[in-house]
Image (cartoon, rainbow, N blue to C red; front, side, top):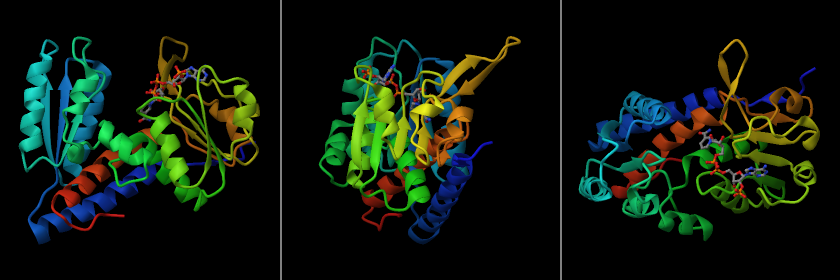
Length: 294
Ligand code: NDP
């Protein structure tokens, strides 16, 4: 007896992409501007290659120009910084994304710092992090932005709700907490050292989980009626030698208790790329002093 509504991230993402595509078509026909997104991949990580391919395809599908830069694993940090300087200076490039993780010989923080904050569509540059943390106009990391959109769509105003974010990474947990705070939630951020995680989770009207541990959150950790956003993507053995993807929340168990929950796959994942395209459009509009999309 499943009770929770299944939040359709895949369908929601298609809607976001359609809105972006409409806006891009108008920009191109009326202003003669085509938003451009440069994606930089260093090395041959198979998962990263899949992400980059998907990003490139969806970039083209919404009518933007995609610039793909695939560099060898041996690429030096200096070479990468030279490429970023060129992309920063290129007026056809409105968004720059460096696919993480980078090979170990490259200093990730130095690379992220070298991206023009106005083109930093991943929102990882410290200047965007600081702008978000101080409630100013920033480019916001795509995964938490997608989560926020789904929460607002589901709940309307988030004002006064108890939000618990499990995980405090720079990519998901921390910016998610900032966005929820900006929307007037009472925010708790939990991590490895949190005591009585179960009780913390049970107090959540909104529970966002970004940990990377398959099905670590069971149904009885969830407040009845809560909205659950499962960011985790974990590959597990499915028996007979095959594998499948599961989230950080035990979906079937949680769905008996929650009011609404995102599935894995088909929840947060598709929203992340849609938000990347939306951020690229935003960066493009700001670069040209044009009104921004909603
Ligand atoms: P990180 O490994 O960077 O961060 C994991 C966080 O979880 C850390 O803050 C860690 O705490 C915390 N944590 C680990 N174990 C526990 C525990 N037992 N109890 C409480 N907290 C714990 O991961 P990311 O944030 O990058 O990613 C999290 C998950 O989301 C992964 O499965 C990843 O694949 C997925 N993901 C999905 C995306 C999407 O598009 N849908 C995009 C990005 C990530 P501490 O800080 O104390 O170590």
